[in-house]
Picture (cartoon, one colour):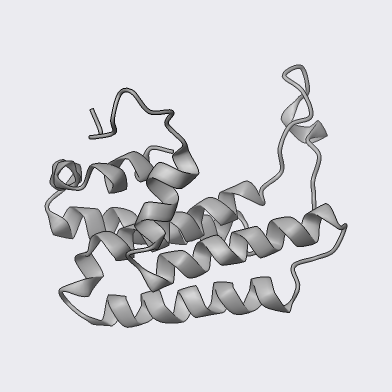
Length: 150
């Protein structure tokens, strides 16, 4: 379906995320920021300078892309914004188990902007995809399409 060899072991990071990030410096910086944030979290720290710098660099680069009428509709812009959105969503509260009520969810410290910023990214992403011609235009870019459904 997505053009991956059937006889190989599919790895989402290797076969989708890294391939897309290697084509876009803004998307690459989102991965580096997420990795640095993860390492900081493993060691019980808030995101450090490295995580923040890579995130700000991704935002700076995607803002440049958004200022260009052609680049603003590119696969690279879509991948970067969806990756930034994913990091916002992953920093939202998560339930501890299936039985818990919403008001009992664990509320970890928000790493980045949270739900409001995630919604801003989602709105912008929907606008870009709509201006590009809709979701069906992503069928020409199967990795990008797959990335959006992750």
